[in-house]
Amino acid sequence: MVIFLPGDSGSSSTALDELTPREIVDELDKHVVGQAEAKRAVAVALRNRIRRQRLEPEMAEEVMPKNILMMGPTGVGKTEVARRLARLSNSPFVKVEATKFTEVGYVGRDVDSMIRDLVEMAIDMIREQKIDLVAERAEKNAEERLLQILMPPQKSEDKDEADSTAATREKLRKKLREGKLDDRMVEIDIQNRNNPIEVVTNQGVEEMDINIRELVPGLFGGQTRRRKMTVLDALDTLTQEEEQKLIDMEQITRMAVERTEQAGIVFLDEMDKIAGREGGRGPEVSREGVQRDLLPIVEGTTVNTRYGMIRTDHILFIAAGAFHVAKPSDMIPEMQGRFPIRVELKPLTKDDFIQILTEPKNALTKQYVALLETEGLKLEFTEDAIEEIARTAMIVNEQTEDIGARRLHTIMEKLLDKISFEAPDMRERSAKIDVAYVNEQLASIVKDQDLSRYIL
Image 1: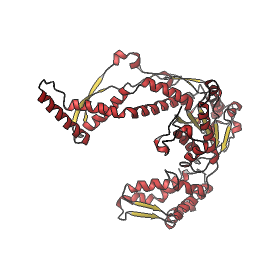
Image 2: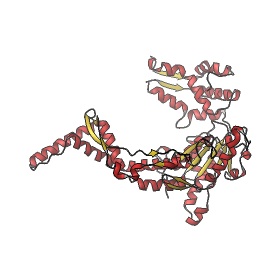
Image 3: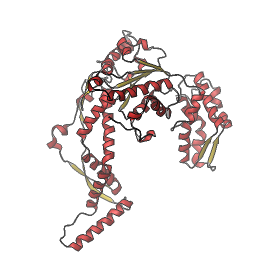
Image 4: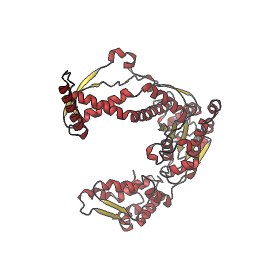
């Protein structure tokens, strides 16, 4: 099975099957700075999925994914590595906080909900892909429907009159495409949406999700309502209706279930918060219980969803946590065994901060330049200014809590606070950020050990 990379990856013509682990790491390097060991681990995990698809069905069924446990302080790229991997492989991906789940019998989300969320994500992904394929046809159909509303067809046996009507219709079509009718008001009949009716029970909302219109189609079938709107809004609404008519939701559901089972990725964050052993009372009472509830999902079970039964045997689980207080060995032995690959992410250095500020496609400096460019202001950072920003971020992380790359957001907001506020009113249409400006704006941050005004 060949899965193509999304367009924003920069290698849309390359099939995922052809990417070696080294090339996967190169793709991740475009978005995430450093952490070579973590990138190698996820690249091998992704490549193993490709290898598994080439095996005989009997052997492929026996090959289980090697789940990964990432350990490292906050802000060093744990989540971003997993998210970029999912985007690269076009896989359904959900990020969940392990602390949101509670042991059965306690108030909170049950662990099965993460698999339901994963299926919903797969449904949305495949629906978008199918809609892209029929978008052109849907636009044409919507245009025809709108033209019938603007100029209802007239039956006439006179050939000249029919030709004149057709010519007028084409003129109207041309005006519609040129946007000359956008503000004109029209009345259209639109289908009522089939919103599911949720029944809340102690098993959770997701399990009892029922669509009454599917159970009693005759009761709700074909109901429409008349709405008045502009031609521009009407064209958009009718296009959406036509898209829904052209796609096969049953086929989408089948594909989504298969993709979830074979290519799904679940990122379990804050794993260290549930790693403590049983305390016996108080708020600690459900930590080990949550682990025991997570265990069947991770090692492979069947989860009931509104789209059918989902097997979790081949879903890749990537767990992450700071593990400052708790250690991986504090998890129950069965859970430890389900995460055979351990990767320790290193704290970020000054050089890493410089790379984060300049190299990735979505680098912070590039973001601020683009934002202020919308105000007509040209912003420029000198190399020594970027070095000073990186040095300041590293010092503040050392003096207070180390929050990794997130510190750069705090520093950059403080640095550009004055320019961001005054940008619309500035006469000068350019601003240069040099080391002197950085020192002037950030001097108070470095001196103030408390930093209570700037750290949330």
